[in-house]
Image (cartoon, rainbow, N blue to C red; front, side, top):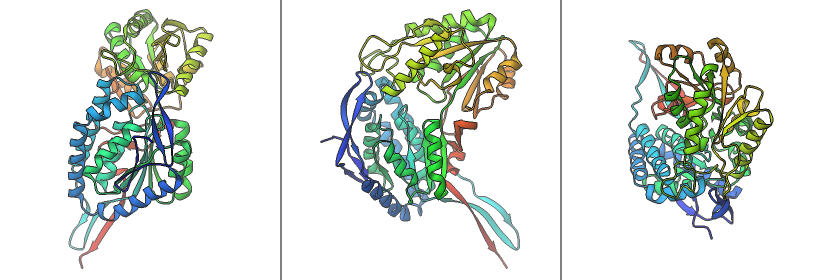
Length: 468
């Protein structure tokens, strides 16, 4: 029997069958997760719908419950961290930080003040815009940051008065199940349910008649399927999808300082961040120095099993993604790319790929045009500013990007021309609960976080009172 159970109606429930969860540091199964049946999914949605009747009525109680959820997560690292490391691969210290981050998101939405929106108040009429909860939310989360990205959905959805059925990725289901189990101590039964399973379970969720909202974080291809599945029932959707984030180094930047920062923002979480730097544009005159610094940092980085002391970067999370990174790097090498460091798999068990830096590569090569989502970074040269802006924007992705300059105002002028949801200057990957996060074009629909993310879990109602 698995030590992990579904959470339905506040109870821990086994499933009739289980599936293996792989430790990416070994490539071998280390635990089993419950494989929810369609009947159990129906039960989870029914439980959420029942809980919604009372949960939506008391905002103060919801805020207190979220504060209690935050306190649970602030002390959960000892229990959840090792599970997250074994299923996701990230170093244990980073897994613990992820637990703390989830707590910060819960606290933010508990404390967020929502002003009253009065649009008319005179002798004849009082009218205001009221934010009403939607009902039951189907939330689907990815494998790169399972806990904190779940909190991006749980926090605002619950604060708004909705209830949730949550499905984590089948590659990383276990820490999420344990997190939701712990959070039951702060929530009424049925408010937050968690089911685990494969792609078929996800399809049942998005087409199910009960949820009125689908919040999904994952790949562009799957996001399109989610949108299509939700459309016949006109479910509201928020889609946070992939990115191919450019970093543009301007000719007045300090190449050594910038290169060190770019390395950190490209290889964080082994490159498995949707808004991480995915391609770097540098002036031709700076190419050698930037490539040299980033390559030296990559070569010196300590990759290994996240449970070992001193490890900075873990493996790629799963075999399909591991094979994809191998394929993209091999394609670039076949097309003439220069390998400054790395370029191949590591000679050890698990899904480890050498941190790789590529130069003499440009658009038309897959690793430039597509999202690699792994520890491989192409560095591309350009000649003038207007040209590089056009090249950076010539993609169907539009999640985020950054510009690096010795003059922050000049950098901001260039960054404002990027077609993406977040444009950073002299930094990258700076996120907070109060900052809206979303993408242009294929990188998503809607936003998460901040008051805008909270509003995304509500419907607008005009309450109009005639005084006469």
